[in-house]
Image 1 (tube, rainbow over the protein chains, first blue to last red):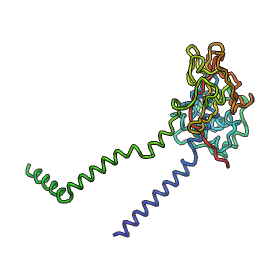
Image 2: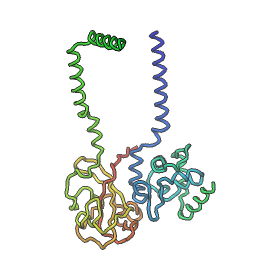
Image 3: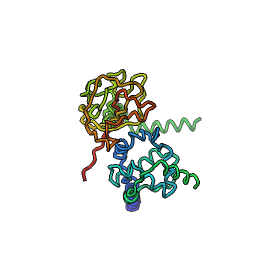
Length: 147
Length: 175
């Protein structure tokens, strides 16, 4: 009887450990929230405002940024804009702050099965920074609306 | 009714057989002391440390030496009818701003400071303060305090500068 209970407890512990490790690798390692928020504040917030509302010529991200993830071109756009591509952040931290912005500010605009940005992906996209953004963004949004 | 009487009698006797008056006093005492000790646990104090020192810090906000002004370049709103985190009446705080960090001498931690300009009337002209820590040349516009940040407000006429604490600094690991 005792051996049976021990076996059950061992199985439960192993399951719990596996869940913890899995969640750590999938979610925990992706975003360091304190670092991502600090990077946002230091490098983005000055123009995009604390909650991503923006203003004047600064585009609104709050409740909106997730729409760009519905197409590949939009996904690349968020990395190719000057503020991202030319920032002083390295690839992993740029990916991190983008993922943080999307999850914190995207709201209902974020697709349900959103793929988080990876450092490799960001490294590839930022090789071609956008020079002209305003017209590009308008056309991109029109394309996204049609889809 | 008899059934309820019997049930209560049985349970009361059962409790009486298994416990003592001293045991009851001991339990009550432990509960009282325990509940009194809970607020003293270090968890609560650690949580309090995360509060931003908006009101509890040392220094004179109308002096250029004040810790929050480590990167300021302009007239201090605290001398112009406003405070270090609010604009004087009749001016508008620009939502677009530049952001840096300053070390609070009270707790030794770095805080993220937003240097929002107040705009709309002519330069305040008192308490000019130029410290420039972390200031970068104009080609790094987002990190330059020479930019007229009133470009984000309705009027681009600069009046004075605030220094609003917006967060805690983050120490990057050197790899």
